[in-house]
Length: 337
Image (cartoon, rainbow, N blue to C red; front, side, top):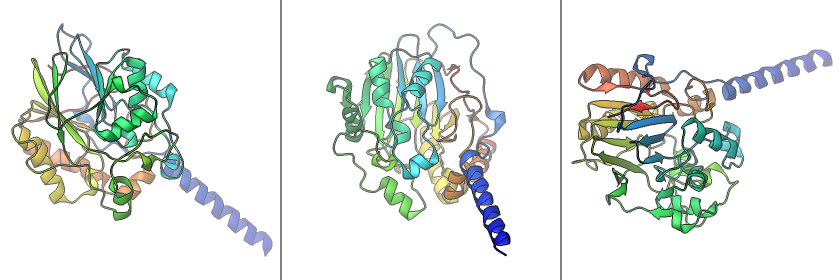
């Protein structure tokens, strides 16, 4: 009898361990259509404006003279560390990420808000590249906690244009994606400000949201918008037309159909682009090399509705034939203008 009981318990433990490993180490398919993928440019015309994509909302813009970056996030702490442990910048990952993006000097790095998957690595990126760290007071306190000098920190003012070479970057205050789960929403969005310098290692939830920004970018070659989180403020983007929208779609599928329609209306329809490039659709814990993955299965189980994101984007692509949907390769330069 004891042998049977022991065998049953052992088998149950094995099943639970295997199930846990499956949920924490495997990923769903990315919620984007493979047909939208574009390849990096084999040749770049002189004076062209290009973008490189690392994943999440990390984008590198270059016009032949000036380079600047959103977020600059290359670390990928695992799901257990994010939920239950302490995290800090992965210096080796940052070094690799900068090398793969062919970046050694930046005019600025601008986290779109202050959560760890946007702002955690930015101070180290600024240290290594001489960049100005731009963002909210919360982002500034992440920089201060990492020892970045005040001369490299600038708290931005809403709708006040920032000149980076020939790029004019205008930050517009927005709203972060709203978590449907009340407990998660409180942990991630409640008490939103980082009020003192934040020195890692700390909990992922110590990287509070701060202010969420949409960036409108104007250049002599063209205009674009970077929307890092699937949140919006009604009417906030009125008058900010853009030829391209980098559209954050992270966990958009977990929202209601009405929310998704409002989000599209307030970002894409407001700004009238001819091209939409989804971003923030890949895994927060997946590798930073090789093919992009969708969310780790444990995260997908918690957020639910991942498949709704792809369906929604496919419907919008069909309904708006004048708007081209494309997704970017990892690290390779793509010509925007």
